[in-house]
Length: 103
Image 1: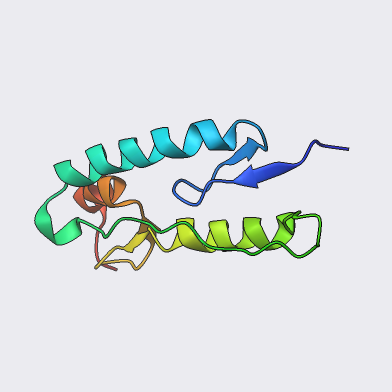
Image 2: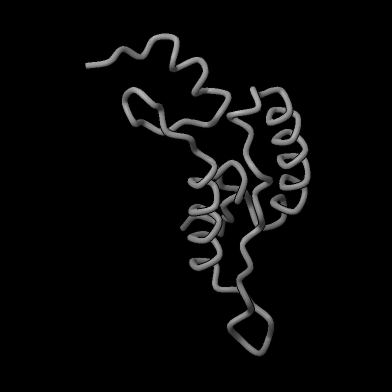
């Protein structure tokens, strides 16, 4: 069985329960750097960390609900291509649009 993993609400990648608290501030800082370099029309509002309340008296979180909310948050960061409709991170959309041709 795999150890429990938590999905980052910014990038959508899985991290261990101990390392997610280290990853998230660094990921958010990287997100800000990349977002600031984008053209104004592609800049996005800062992603908000989804709030999931503890489900047990002991204070444990439902890892499934937490991961689902984080995955949805990460997917909301994607921007659709005006030509083909596929979704990309804003910095990757610029690269994609160079080679995307209308059907």
